Image 1 (tube, one colour):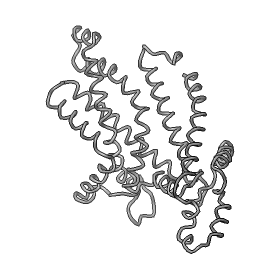
Image 2 (spheres, one colour; image 1 turned 180 degrees about the vertical axis):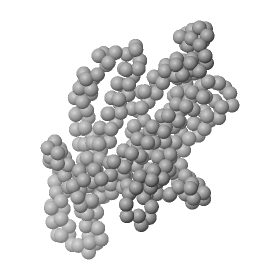
Image 3 (cartoon, rainbow, N blue to C red; image 1 turned 60 degrees about the vertical axis):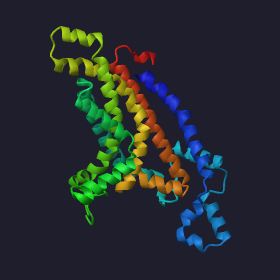
Image 4 (tube, rainbow, N blue to C red; image 1 turned 90 degrees about the vertical axis):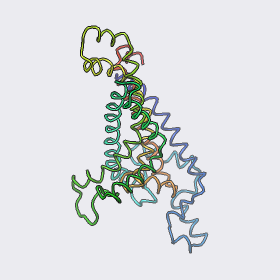
Length: 322
């Protein structure tokens, strides 16, 4: 396990270099002007000389490769730079928002995995039955629904029409303290929408995996020995059927992050979505690089976690050979 993690860490270094360098190159080619974004409305009446002086002070007049190298060498020492759009250190921008984004993604992903496993097992138990057809059809329908559309529909139904849950934010309006009860109530809708966006894939994978496992010889042998259907389903078929789902965990992380950005925007959740949008439109190089590297690290960590879980739960796979 340690060797696998070490090899993946060595592989991650050049990946992060390429990702951050590509971000600087794309941002440099962006039509957005970071100087005008930084100056705001003051840029409307500023002359060319003032804007050029501000461009020099911000360092955006230098080649993007030079800016990338300066950012990289500083980041290796723990200095992620200063965010021009947020007017504060990049580390503070990410630190203030990462907790809430992590909370949202963790709750949503856990709900998607648990709900998808339950529905997938129920669908596979009676293949071709009404429950199987209903669950499968619903999964395909949800997989085609854009996450922002689902979020807007959830706001209209649960917040506006039924008035059951708050429409957005982290706490109630005009509140002075952040309480656990308020956070939970405000978390239900965004986490639920994000979970629904990931649910179909787990349902379909678990359903297919368990259905295939039920036809294998070890499961037939368990039934022949007189074991109960409950034991056969949960003790044998489910364990074998969940193996493909382990590889799905890593592959779903990029879409989970993308979906979280959209969900946070719709529900005004105080995560990294707003910072990402503002950094992109303002071409905030240090903040964009840090957020891009953070997303890349999350994807690489998800793939590593999937491989470790697969090696631990599948006796046919040896971690030493991975």
